[in-house]
Image (cartoon, rainbow, N blue to C red; front, side, top):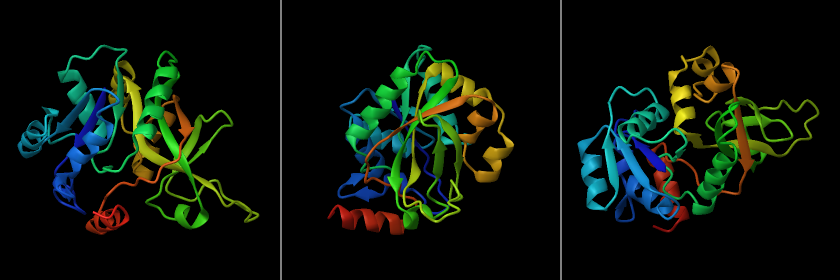
Length: 239
Protein backbone atom coordinates (compact mmCIF):
# COMPACT_ATOMS: atom_id res chain seq x y z
CA UNK A 1 0.00 0.00 0.00
CA UNK A 2 1.10 3.57 -0.72
CA UNK A 3 -0.04 6.17 1.79
CA UNK A 4 0.39 9.85 0.96
CA UNK A 5 0.31 12.17 3.99
CA UNK A 6 -1.27 15.45 2.92
CA UNK A 7 -1.25 18.17 5.57
CA UNK A 8 -2.81 21.45 4.44
CA UNK A 9 -1.03 23.74 6.91
CA UNK A 10 2.48 24.72 5.85
CA UNK A 11 4.40 27.70 7.19
CA UNK A 12 6.35 28.23 3.96
CA UNK A 13 3.61 27.36 1.47
CA UNK A 14 0.04 27.16 2.85
CA UNK A 15 -2.30 24.77 1.00
CA UNK A 16 0.57 23.61 -1.20
CA UNK A 17 -0.83 20.08 -1.56
CA UNK A 18 -3.76 21.61 -3.42
CA UNK A 19 -1.62 23.90 -5.61
CA UNK A 20 -2.18 23.17 -9.28
CA UNK A 21 0.33 21.21 -11.36
CA UNK A 22 -1.07 22.02 -14.76
CA UNK A 23 -4.78 21.52 -14.09
CA UNK A 24 -4.37 18.91 -11.33
CA UNK A 25 -3.91 19.47 -7.57
CA UNK A 26 -0.41 18.53 -6.41
CA UNK A 27 -1.54 15.69 -4.13
CA UNK A 28 -3.53 14.14 -6.98
CA UNK A 29 -0.61 14.50 -9.39
CA UNK A 30 1.52 12.61 -6.85
CA UNK A 31 -1.12 9.91 -6.40
CA UNK A 32 -1.44 9.45 -10.17
CA UNK A 33 2.33 9.04 -10.47
CA UNK A 34 2.27 5.93 -8.27
CA UNK A 35 -1.22 4.47 -8.67
CA UNK A 36 -0.05 1.62 -10.93
CA UNK A 37 2.27 0.25 -8.23
CA UNK A 38 -0.19 -0.54 -5.45
CA UNK A 39 -3.32 0.66 -3.69
CA UNK A 40 -3.05 4.39 -2.92
CA UNK A 41 -4.61 6.13 0.09
CA UNK A 42 -4.33 9.82 0.93
CA UNK A 43 -4.08 10.59 4.67
CA UNK A 44 -5.10 14.13 5.52
CA UNK A 45 -6.46 16.48 8.18
CA UNK A 46 -8.53 18.43 5.65
CA UNK A 47 -12.05 17.73 4.44
CA UNK A 48 -11.20 19.71 1.31
CA UNK A 49 -8.41 17.24 0.50
CA UNK A 50 -10.77 14.31 1.14
CA UNK A 51 -13.29 15.84 -1.27
CA UNK A 52 -10.64 16.45 -3.94
CA UNK A 53 -9.31 12.89 -3.54
CA UNK A 54 -12.81 11.45 -3.95
CA UNK A 55 -13.45 13.65 -6.97
CA UNK A 56 -10.45 12.06 -8.69
CA UNK A 57 -11.32 8.54 -7.57
CA UNK A 58 -8.75 8.11 -4.78
CA UNK A 59 -9.33 6.79 -1.27
CA UNK A 60 -8.77 9.25 1.56
CA UNK A 61 -8.64 8.83 5.33
CA UNK A 62 -9.23 11.70 7.74
CA UNK A 63 -6.52 11.92 10.40
CA UNK A 64 -5.85 14.16 13.37
CA UNK A 65 -4.58 17.72 12.90
CA UNK A 66 -2.23 17.09 15.85
CA UNK A 67 0.00 14.54 14.07
CA UNK A 68 3.62 15.57 14.62
CA UNK A 69 4.89 14.20 11.31
CA UNK A 70 3.86 12.60 8.06
CA UNK A 71 4.90 9.23 9.48
CA UNK A 72 2.57 9.66 12.44
CA UNK A 73 -0.18 10.53 9.98
CA UNK A 74 0.32 7.42 7.85
CA UNK A 75 0.38 5.29 10.99
CA UNK A 76 -2.98 6.69 12.10
CA UNK A 77 -4.39 6.07 8.62
CA UNK A 78 -2.96 2.54 8.47
CA UNK A 79 -4.48 1.75 11.87
CA UNK A 80 -7.88 3.01 10.76
CA UNK A 81 -7.59 0.80 7.69
CA UNK A 82 -6.98 -2.27 9.91
CA UNK A 83 -3.90 -3.35 7.97
CA UNK A 84 -2.15 -6.62 8.73
CA UNK A 85 1.23 -6.56 10.50
CA UNK A 86 3.04 -7.72 7.36
CA UNK A 87 1.39 -5.19 5.02
CA UNK A 88 4.05 -3.17 3.19
CA UNK A 89 3.46 0.56 3.48
CA UNK A 90 5.27 3.11 1.33
CA UNK A 91 5.24 6.72 2.48
CA UNK A 92 5.27 9.05 -0.53
CA UNK A 93 5.16 12.75 0.30
CA UNK A 94 2.32 14.76 -1.25
CA UNK A 95 4.78 17.40 -2.46
CA UNK A 96 6.56 14.98 -4.85
CA UNK A 97 4.32 15.28 -7.94
CA UNK A 98 7.13 14.31 -10.32
CA UNK A 99 8.37 11.27 -8.43
CA UNK A 100 9.29 8.52 -10.85
CA UNK A 101 7.27 5.29 -10.73
CA UNK A 102 10.46 3.23 -11.03
CA UNK A 103 11.90 4.90 -7.92
CA UNK A 104 8.89 4.00 -5.80
CA UNK A 105 8.93 0.46 -7.18
CA UNK A 106 12.56 0.16 -6.08
CA UNK A 107 11.59 1.16 -2.55
CA UNK A 108 8.66 -1.26 -2.52
CA UNK A 109 10.96 -4.13 -3.52
CA UNK A 110 13.61 -3.11 -0.97
CA UNK A 111 11.00 -3.02 1.79
CA UNK A 112 9.77 -6.46 0.79
CA UNK A 113 13.36 -7.77 0.87
CA UNK A 114 13.85 -6.63 4.48
CA UNK A 115 10.29 -7.21 5.71
CA UNK A 116 11.25 -10.08 8.05
CA UNK A 117 14.51 -8.55 9.28
CA UNK A 118 13.73 -7.35 12.80
CA UNK A 119 16.79 -5.07 12.98
CA UNK A 120 15.74 -3.09 9.91
CA UNK A 121 12.84 -0.85 10.94
CA UNK A 122 12.61 1.19 7.74
CA UNK A 123 13.90 1.34 4.18
CA UNK A 124 14.59 4.42 2.09
CA UNK A 125 16.56 5.70 -0.91
CA UNK A 126 19.37 8.03 -1.88
CA UNK A 127 20.81 9.52 -5.04
CA UNK A 128 24.30 10.81 -5.76
CA UNK A 129 24.74 14.58 -5.97
CA UNK A 130 27.72 16.88 -6.44
CA UNK A 131 29.31 19.14 -3.84
CA UNK A 132 27.38 22.24 -4.89
CA UNK A 133 24.06 20.49 -4.47
CA UNK A 134 25.08 18.71 -1.28
CA UNK A 135 26.35 21.84 0.44
CA UNK A 136 22.82 22.90 1.35
CA UNK A 137 21.19 22.14 4.73
CA UNK A 138 17.86 21.46 3.01
CA UNK A 139 19.49 18.52 1.21
CA UNK A 140 19.79 15.73 3.76
CA UNK A 141 22.95 13.66 3.42
CA UNK A 142 23.42 10.07 4.51
CA UNK A 143 26.52 8.01 5.24
CA UNK A 144 26.11 4.26 4.82
CA UNK A 145 28.06 1.06 5.27
CA UNK A 146 29.30 -0.72 2.15
CA UNK A 147 26.08 -2.75 2.35
CA UNK A 148 23.93 0.41 2.27
CA UNK A 149 22.89 0.35 5.92
CA UNK A 150 22.58 3.87 7.32
CA UNK A 151 25.25 5.09 9.72
CA UNK A 152 23.97 8.66 10.03
CA UNK A 153 21.79 11.28 8.35
CA UNK A 154 22.57 14.98 8.59
CA UNK A 155 21.86 18.40 7.19
CA UNK A 156 25.58 19.01 7.52
CA UNK A 157 27.93 18.01 4.72
CA UNK A 158 28.90 14.44 5.57
CA UNK A 159 31.20 12.65 5.35
CA UNK A 160 33.71 15.43 5.97
CA UNK A 161 36.19 15.45 3.11
CA UNK A 162 39.45 16.51 4.72
CA UNK A 163 41.48 16.22 1.51
CA UNK A 164 38.83 17.95 -0.65
CA UNK A 165 38.78 15.07 -3.15
CA UNK A 166 35.18 13.95 -2.84
CA UNK A 167 32.76 15.12 -5.52
CA UNK A 168 29.77 12.84 -4.90
CA UNK A 169 27.56 12.70 -1.82
CA UNK A 170 24.55 10.55 -0.94
CA UNK A 171 21.43 12.73 -0.84
CA UNK A 172 18.52 11.16 1.00
CA UNK A 173 15.15 10.99 -0.74
CA UNK A 174 12.22 11.55 1.61
CA UNK A 175 10.38 8.30 0.91
CA UNK A 176 10.12 5.48 3.45
CA UNK A 177 9.04 1.87 3.46
CA UNK A 178 7.76 -0.07 6.48
CA UNK A 179 5.66 -3.05 7.32
CA UNK A 180 2.70 -2.05 9.47
CA UNK A 181 4.29 -3.74 12.50
CA UNK A 182 7.54 -1.81 12.02
CA UNK A 183 5.67 1.45 11.45
CA UNK A 184 3.93 0.86 14.78
CA UNK A 185 7.30 0.23 16.48
CA UNK A 186 8.68 3.47 15.04
CA UNK A 187 5.72 5.60 16.08
CA UNK A 188 5.79 4.19 19.61
CA UNK A 189 9.41 5.27 20.09
CA UNK A 190 9.86 8.55 21.93
CA UNK A 191 11.36 11.48 20.05
CA UNK A 192 15.14 11.39 20.31
CA UNK A 193 17.77 14.01 21.01
CA UNK A 194 19.39 13.61 17.59
CA UNK A 195 16.02 13.80 15.88
CA UNK A 196 15.22 17.09 17.57
CA UNK A 197 18.66 18.58 16.89
CA UNK A 198 18.68 17.86 13.17
CA UNK A 199 14.89 17.91 12.71
CA UNK A 200 15.16 14.53 10.97
CA UNK A 201 12.73 11.91 12.24
CA UNK A 202 14.69 8.99 10.76
CA UNK A 203 17.38 9.60 13.40
CA UNK A 204 14.90 8.30 15.97
CA UNK A 205 15.45 4.83 14.53
CA UNK A 206 19.25 4.98 14.75
CA UNK A 207 19.13 6.57 18.19
CA UNK A 208 17.08 3.62 19.43
CA UNK A 209 19.57 1.05 18.15
CA UNK A 210 17.66 -0.09 15.07
CA UNK A 211 18.75 0.09 11.43
CA UNK A 212 17.65 1.63 8.12
CA UNK A 213 18.43 -0.02 4.78
CA UNK A 214 18.94 2.10 1.68
CA UNK A 215 19.29 1.73 -2.06
CA UNK A 216 20.79 4.05 -4.63
CA UNK A 217 18.45 5.28 -7.38
CA UNK A 218 18.50 7.83 -10.16
CA UNK A 219 15.84 10.50 -9.68
CA UNK A 220 15.28 14.01 -10.97
CA UNK A 221 12.32 14.66 -8.70
CA UNK A 222 12.44 17.05 -5.76
CA UNK A 223 10.07 18.07 -3.00
CA UNK A 224 8.15 21.31 -3.45
CA UNK A 225 8.50 23.30 -0.23
CA UNK A 226 7.96 26.85 -1.48
CA UNK A 227 6.20 28.77 -4.25
CA UNK A 228 9.63 29.24 -5.81
CA UNK A 229 10.09 25.46 -5.90
CA UNK A 230 6.73 25.14 -7.63
CA UNK A 231 7.66 27.73 -10.24
CA UNK A 232 10.95 25.89 -10.86
CA UNK A 233 9.18 22.55 -11.22
CA UNK A 234 6.59 23.91 -13.62
CA UNK A 235 9.33 25.46 -15.74
CA UNK A 236 11.37 22.26 -15.81
CA UNK A 237 8.36 20.23 -16.88
CA UNK A 238 7.02 22.94 -19.19
CA UNK A 239 3.67 23.19 -17.45
